[in-house]
Length: 119
Image (cartoon, rainbow, N blue to C red; front, side, top):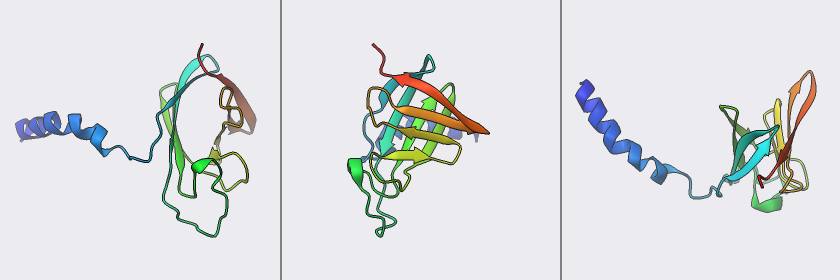
């Protein structure tokens, strides 16, 4: 049984990139609070057509995946007007300036992390 499972993993693991959504953009790389951060926007299906904001090519159902300090965050697209922002209520991301996006988390008060593209 373990041999069969190991054989399946050997075959399936190289196929994982093929399962990646075609609607995902290439991950952007940043330094946030001195640590590397990867940000990948995934355009979702329109699941709330009554919400008119599709700014930045994103629609309701879109999300961003942030990988930072060993944590992977999947933040849903907010319904805020303007530049797309993403939040789960604790973490928040917005790239009003793509070279210096806003990244913060709520710990009682908001704790902001300075982000910039690596040089």
